[in-house]
Length: 283
Ligand code: PMP
Image (cartoon, rainbow, N blue to C red; front, top):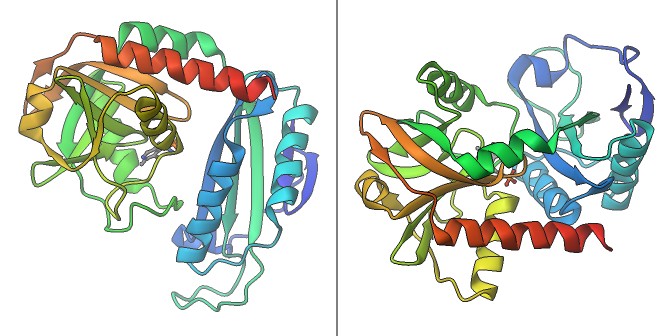
Protein backbone atom coordinates (compact mmCIF):
# COMPACT_ATOMS: atom_id res chain seq x y z
CA UNK A 1 0.00 0.00 0.00
CA UNK A 2 0.92 3.67 -0.30
CA UNK A 3 1.05 6.05 2.63
CA UNK A 4 1.46 9.76 3.17
CA UNK A 5 4.65 11.18 4.70
CA UNK A 6 4.95 14.98 4.74
CA UNK A 7 3.76 15.88 1.22
CA UNK A 8 4.88 12.66 -0.45
CA UNK A 9 2.95 9.48 -1.23
CA UNK A 10 5.39 6.63 -0.67
CA UNK A 11 5.37 2.85 -0.29
CA UNK A 12 4.32 1.68 3.17
CA UNK A 13 7.20 0.49 5.33
CA UNK A 14 9.53 3.31 4.42
CA UNK A 15 8.39 6.02 6.84
CA UNK A 16 11.09 6.85 9.39
CA UNK A 17 9.73 6.66 12.94
CA UNK A 18 11.26 9.16 15.33
CA UNK A 19 10.69 8.24 19.01
CA UNK A 20 11.00 11.91 19.91
CA UNK A 21 8.03 12.89 17.75
CA UNK A 22 5.68 14.75 20.10
CA UNK A 23 2.83 12.71 18.67
CA UNK A 24 4.32 9.67 20.44
CA UNK A 25 5.51 11.50 23.55
CA UNK A 26 2.45 13.62 24.35
CA UNK A 27 -0.23 12.71 21.81
CA UNK A 28 0.55 16.24 20.65
CA UNK A 29 -1.22 16.28 17.32
CA UNK A 30 -4.49 16.15 15.42
CA UNK A 31 -6.18 14.00 12.78
CA UNK A 32 -9.10 13.72 10.37
CA UNK A 33 -10.94 10.79 8.86
CA UNK A 34 -12.60 11.34 5.49
CA UNK A 35 -14.86 8.76 3.92
CA UNK A 36 -14.47 7.78 0.29
CA UNK A 37 -17.56 6.93 -1.76
CA UNK A 38 -17.07 5.82 -5.32
CA UNK A 39 -13.43 6.98 -5.34
CA UNK A 40 -14.24 10.50 -4.15
CA UNK A 41 -13.66 12.03 -0.72
CA UNK A 42 -16.95 13.00 0.95
CA UNK A 43 -17.23 16.43 2.62
CA UNK A 44 -13.49 17.01 2.22
CA UNK A 45 -13.79 20.75 2.64
CA UNK A 46 -15.71 20.45 5.93
CA UNK A 47 -13.22 17.94 7.33
CA UNK A 48 -10.21 20.05 6.49
CA UNK A 49 -11.82 23.23 7.73
CA UNK A 50 -12.08 21.41 11.08
CA UNK A 51 -8.48 20.18 10.71
CA UNK A 52 -7.36 23.79 10.35
CA UNK A 53 -9.43 24.79 13.37
CA UNK A 54 -7.94 21.99 15.48
CA UNK A 55 -4.45 23.08 14.37
CA UNK A 56 -5.18 26.69 15.28
CA UNK A 57 -6.53 25.78 18.72
CA UNK A 58 -3.31 23.89 19.49
CA UNK A 59 -1.03 26.39 17.76
CA UNK A 60 0.13 23.72 15.34
CA UNK A 61 1.67 25.02 12.14
CA UNK A 62 -0.17 24.05 8.94
CA UNK A 63 2.68 23.10 6.59
CA UNK A 64 0.56 22.94 3.43
CA UNK A 65 -2.53 24.69 2.14
CA UNK A 66 -5.87 22.96 1.71
CA UNK A 67 -5.55 22.36 -2.06
CA UNK A 68 -2.32 20.46 -1.30
CA UNK A 69 -4.07 18.33 1.36
CA UNK A 70 -6.85 17.68 -1.16
CA UNK A 71 -4.40 16.64 -3.85
CA UNK A 72 -2.59 14.31 -1.40
CA UNK A 73 -5.91 12.81 -0.27
CA UNK A 74 -6.91 12.13 -3.87
CA UNK A 75 -3.52 10.60 -4.57
CA UNK A 76 -3.86 8.29 -1.53
CA UNK A 77 -7.24 7.19 -2.88
CA UNK A 78 -6.08 6.56 -6.44
CA UNK A 79 -2.70 4.97 -5.62
CA UNK A 80 -4.40 2.53 -3.23
CA UNK A 81 -7.28 1.84 -5.64
CA UNK A 82 -9.89 2.77 -3.04
CA UNK A 83 -13.46 2.65 -4.32
CA UNK A 84 -15.25 2.82 -0.96
CA UNK A 85 -13.17 3.40 2.12
CA UNK A 86 -11.51 5.99 4.29
CA UNK A 87 -8.53 8.27 4.37
CA UNK A 88 -6.81 9.00 7.69
CA UNK A 89 -4.52 12.02 7.93
CA UNK A 90 -2.70 13.09 11.08
CA UNK A 91 -0.34 15.88 11.95
CA UNK A 92 1.89 15.99 15.00
CA UNK A 93 3.73 19.00 16.33
CA UNK A 94 6.96 17.38 15.20
CA UNK A 95 10.26 16.21 16.64
CA UNK A 96 12.09 17.81 19.57
CA UNK A 97 13.91 16.73 22.76
CA UNK A 98 11.22 15.69 25.26
CA UNK A 99 9.89 18.69 27.12
CA UNK A 100 6.28 19.52 27.97
CA UNK A 101 6.92 23.06 26.80
CA UNK A 102 6.44 23.37 23.05
CA UNK A 103 7.98 25.89 20.73
CA UNK A 104 5.61 27.57 18.29
CA UNK A 105 7.79 27.34 15.21
CA UNK A 106 8.15 23.57 14.90
CA UNK A 107 8.02 21.56 11.69
CA UNK A 108 4.75 19.55 11.85
CA UNK A 109 4.92 15.89 10.79
CA UNK A 110 2.09 14.80 8.49
CA UNK A 111 1.33 11.10 7.93
CA UNK A 112 -1.65 9.27 6.52
CA UNK A 113 -3.08 6.17 4.94
CA UNK A 114 -6.13 4.93 3.04
CA UNK A 115 -8.12 1.75 3.54
CA UNK A 116 -10.94 0.07 1.68
CA UNK A 117 -14.11 -0.37 3.72
CA UNK A 118 -16.90 -2.76 2.84
CA UNK A 119 -20.16 -0.81 2.87
CA UNK A 120 -21.98 -4.06 3.78
CA UNK A 121 -21.23 -3.81 7.50
CA UNK A 122 -22.43 -0.18 7.58
CA UNK A 123 -25.60 -1.15 5.73
CA UNK A 124 -26.20 -4.00 8.20
CA UNK A 125 -25.95 -1.89 11.35
CA UNK A 126 -27.99 0.84 9.70
CA UNK A 127 -30.90 -1.48 9.10
CA UNK A 128 -30.68 -3.46 12.35
CA UNK A 129 -29.51 -0.70 14.72
CA UNK A 130 -26.86 -1.03 17.39
CA UNK A 131 -26.64 -1.54 21.15
CA UNK A 132 -25.00 1.23 23.17
CA UNK A 133 -23.45 1.34 26.62
CA UNK A 134 -24.19 4.29 28.89
CA UNK A 135 -21.06 5.44 30.66
CA UNK A 136 -19.58 8.45 32.40
CA UNK A 137 -17.68 10.95 30.23
CA UNK A 138 -14.24 11.05 31.85
CA UNK A 139 -12.54 13.09 29.11
CA UNK A 140 -10.86 16.50 29.27
CA UNK A 141 -12.68 19.76 28.61
CA UNK A 142 -11.48 20.38 25.04
CA UNK A 143 -13.34 17.61 23.22
CA UNK A 144 -13.94 20.10 20.39
CA UNK A 145 -10.33 19.54 19.28
CA UNK A 146 -9.84 16.43 17.14
CA UNK A 147 -6.64 15.56 18.99
CA UNK A 148 -4.72 12.31 19.05
CA UNK A 149 -5.39 12.02 22.79
CA UNK A 150 -8.26 9.54 22.72
CA UNK A 151 -7.77 7.48 25.89
CA UNK A 152 -11.13 8.47 27.37
CA UNK A 153 -12.83 7.52 24.10
CA UNK A 154 -10.80 4.33 23.77
CA UNK A 155 -11.66 3.22 27.30
CA UNK A 156 -15.36 3.96 26.76
CA UNK A 157 -15.38 1.90 23.54
CA UNK A 158 -13.67 -1.06 25.25
CA UNK A 159 -16.19 -0.95 28.08
CA UNK A 160 -19.05 -0.84 25.56
CA UNK A 161 -17.66 -3.87 23.73
CA UNK A 162 -17.36 -5.75 27.04
CA UNK A 163 -21.13 -5.33 27.35
CA UNK A 164 -21.67 -6.48 23.74
CA UNK A 165 -22.35 -2.93 22.59
CA UNK A 166 -21.04 -1.34 19.41
CA UNK A 167 -20.79 2.15 20.87
CA UNK A 168 -20.69 4.01 24.17
CA UNK A 169 -22.99 6.92 24.99
CA UNK A 170 -21.20 9.24 27.39
CA UNK A 171 -22.73 11.58 29.97
CA UNK A 172 -21.30 14.23 32.27
CA UNK A 173 -23.21 14.28 35.54
CA UNK A 174 -26.38 13.10 33.81
CA UNK A 175 -26.03 15.30 30.69
CA UNK A 176 -25.50 13.29 27.51
CA UNK A 177 -22.48 14.55 25.55
CA UNK A 178 -21.61 12.20 22.68
CA UNK A 179 -20.50 8.71 21.71
CA UNK A 180 -16.92 7.46 21.94
CA UNK A 181 -16.51 8.15 18.21
CA UNK A 182 -19.88 9.55 17.20
CA UNK A 183 -22.49 12.21 18.02
CA UNK A 184 -25.79 11.31 19.64
CA UNK A 185 -29.26 12.50 18.60
CA UNK A 186 -32.63 11.85 20.20
CA UNK A 187 -36.05 12.28 18.61
CA UNK A 188 -39.01 13.39 20.74
CA UNK A 189 -42.40 14.15 19.16
CA UNK A 190 -40.73 14.50 15.75
CA UNK A 191 -38.10 17.00 16.92
CA UNK A 192 -34.38 16.27 16.94
CA UNK A 193 -32.20 17.13 19.88
CA UNK A 194 -28.42 16.96 20.10
CA UNK A 195 -25.72 18.44 22.31
CA UNK A 196 -24.70 21.92 21.11
CA UNK A 197 -21.30 22.39 19.55
CA UNK A 198 -19.32 23.39 22.66
CA UNK A 199 -15.99 22.37 24.18
CA UNK A 200 -17.65 19.20 25.51
CA UNK A 201 -18.14 17.48 22.13
CA UNK A 202 -16.50 17.11 18.76
CA UNK A 203 -18.64 18.98 16.25
CA UNK A 204 -19.05 16.03 13.90
CA UNK A 205 -19.17 16.71 10.18
CA UNK A 206 -21.92 14.10 9.88
CA UNK A 207 -23.72 15.85 12.77
CA UNK A 208 -23.54 19.16 10.87
CA UNK A 209 -24.77 17.59 7.63
CA UNK A 210 -27.64 15.81 9.40
CA UNK A 211 -28.73 19.04 11.11
CA UNK A 212 -28.69 20.82 7.74
CA UNK A 213 -30.60 18.16 5.83
CA UNK A 214 -33.14 17.83 8.66
CA UNK A 215 -33.84 21.56 8.57
CA UNK A 216 -34.06 21.55 4.77
CA UNK A 217 -36.70 18.84 5.08
CA UNK A 218 -38.74 20.60 7.78
CA UNK A 219 -37.59 18.46 10.68
CA UNK A 220 -37.05 20.72 13.69
CA UNK A 221 -33.63 20.53 15.34
CA UNK A 222 -32.79 21.78 18.81
CA UNK A 223 -29.08 22.02 19.60
CA UNK A 224 -29.45 21.77 23.35
CA UNK A 225 -27.95 19.49 25.97
CA UNK A 226 -30.32 16.73 27.08
CA UNK A 227 -30.34 14.55 30.16
CA UNK A 228 -30.01 10.79 30.57
CA UNK A 229 -33.67 10.93 31.61
CA UNK A 230 -34.61 12.46 28.22
CA UNK A 231 -32.48 9.81 26.53
CA UNK A 232 -34.48 7.12 28.33
CA UNK A 233 -37.80 8.73 27.30
CA UNK A 234 -36.83 9.41 23.67
CA UNK A 235 -38.97 8.06 20.80
CA UNK A 236 -35.88 7.38 18.68
CA UNK A 237 -32.13 7.52 19.23
CA UNK A 238 -29.39 7.50 16.61
CA UNK A 239 -25.69 8.21 16.31
CA UNK A 240 -23.80 9.90 13.50
CA UNK A 241 -20.21 9.66 12.32
CA UNK A 242 -18.15 9.57 9.17
CA UNK A 243 -17.82 5.79 9.28
CA UNK A 244 -21.32 5.00 10.68
CA UNK A 245 -23.33 7.68 8.82
CA UNK A 246 -26.79 7.66 10.51
CA UNK A 247 -27.06 4.53 12.66
CA UNK A 248 -30.11 3.80 14.83
CA UNK A 249 -29.71 2.85 18.49
CA UNK A 250 -31.97 -0.02 19.51
CA UNK A 251 -30.60 -0.74 22.98
CA UNK A 252 -29.16 1.17 25.87
CA UNK A 253 -27.46 -0.83 28.59
CA UNK A 254 -25.43 0.03 31.67
CA UNK A 255 -26.61 1.92 34.76
CA UNK A 256 -29.87 2.48 32.83
CA UNK A 257 -31.55 0.14 30.37
CA UNK A 258 -33.89 0.91 27.50
CA UNK A 259 -34.90 -0.39 24.11
CA UNK A 260 -35.89 1.71 21.09
CA UNK A 261 -37.66 1.09 17.81
CA UNK A 262 -36.03 2.29 14.62
CA UNK A 263 -38.37 5.17 13.89
CA UNK A 264 -39.54 7.15 10.86
CA UNK A 265 -37.38 10.23 11.54
CA UNK A 266 -34.20 8.14 11.68
CA UNK A 267 -34.98 6.26 8.48
CA UNK A 268 -35.88 9.50 6.67
CA UNK A 269 -32.56 11.03 7.69
CA UNK A 270 -30.74 7.91 6.52
CA UNK A 271 -32.37 8.38 3.10
CA UNK A 272 -31.55 12.09 2.94
CA UNK A 273 -27.97 11.33 3.92
CA UNK A 274 -27.66 8.74 1.13
CA UNK A 275 -28.93 11.36 -1.32
CA UNK A 276 -26.29 13.76 -0.03
CA UNK A 277 -23.62 11.13 -0.73
CA UNK A 278 -24.96 10.69 -4.28
CA UNK A 279 -24.81 14.45 -4.82
CA UNK A 280 -21.15 14.37 -3.78
CA UNK A 281 -20.26 11.55 -6.09
CA UNK A 282 -22.07 12.97 -9.10
CA UNK A 283 -19.98 16.17 -9.00
N1 PMP B 1 -17.36 12.56 18.30
C1 PMP B 1 -16.18 11.94 18.44
C2 PMP B 1 -15.55 11.88 19.78
C3 PMP B 1 -15.57 11.32 17.32
O1 PMP B 1 -14.39 10.70 17.45
C4 PMP B 1 -16.24 11.37 16.07
C5 PMP B 1 -15.67 10.67 14.86
N2 PMP B 1 -14.39 11.07 14.56
C6 PMP B 1 -17.45 12.04 15.97
C7 PMP B 1 -17.99 12.63 17.11
C8 PMP B 1 -18.17 12.15 14.67
O2 PMP B 1 -17.54 13.07 13.84
P1 PMP B 1 -17.63 12.98 12.25
O3 PMP B 1 -19.06 12.99 11.88
O4 PMP B 1 -16.91 14.19 11.77
O5 PMP B 1 -16.95 11.70 11.86
